[in-house]
Length: 191
Length: 174
Image 1 (cartoon, helix red, strand yellow):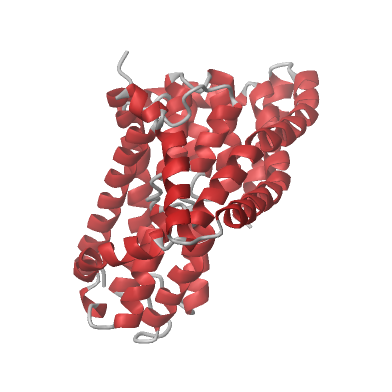
Image 2 (cartoon, rainbow over the protein chains, first blue to last red; image 1 turned 180 degrees about the horizontal axis):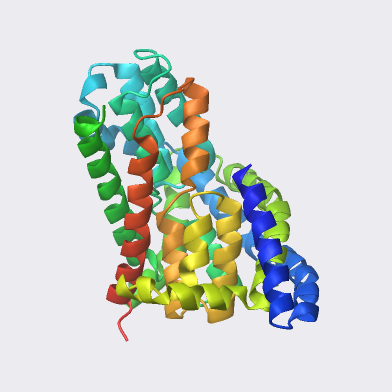
């Protein structure tokens, strides 16, 4: 819904701004040029995307994601004290987090939704503190290997698409820390 | 250190595959099946990417993007952000494919190894599509009162944007 408005706004603004600066013909040509660029971009990153998803599938089948989930459990019990005793919910949360870390978006979402449904059973209709935290953690990215972005970079001719990894980890960790901090703080002050 | 990061991909490919074989995974089958899913992802993001890049190219050709970033550049440079990434920050929480389109545009226009290109890449890699995620989670859990979830998530997004720009300056000085 929101994206429809954004699109309308973008095209409208382009026409107004193009007419006022006498760039009308350029704007007209750019529409089709952009559409073509979309196809090119998608094709040029499809190969890298496919390869990485193949590796992710190996990680999932070899139990790497499962092992990671077990490593994470002690930390997660502290973050979600209300559900520390609820084994099934904690299982779903740690599986969700480890799938997120590994960039298994397709696997992370159903696991996270399972955890969310369990948490919501205690307070139907209202987001509890734990559920808010779960959602905030899932809106902050914690992917260790950002494969899609790396695919875009190599499509643009980058020889070392993964040289941004340390920067991505730093930014992700800071963003996640601020998200958790904000959620824990708001849990105390929000009525 | 640089060599280590450069060789990270082949090393990861090999060690994960080896681990898979050790654990008795049908390596080839898993690779091919995953790759198939990857192609499906590519097919799924193709239509929104085409529609969005058409609008982004129009905006760029009209000069509206330049004007907007000129207008906002004092605020952004005060925070240490390159003004060119303004558009990316606006669409990031709303639509993943839109953000990917805008980010990819920045990366190819300014170069993947430029300050703007790297900042855009790190922003894409360190944030998520907040509103979509909130909608999916609360929809599935039947939540009507979301309380502070959205403001807290937006705090995380803002921190991610600022941190992305700082981290790029820190990791790629000069």
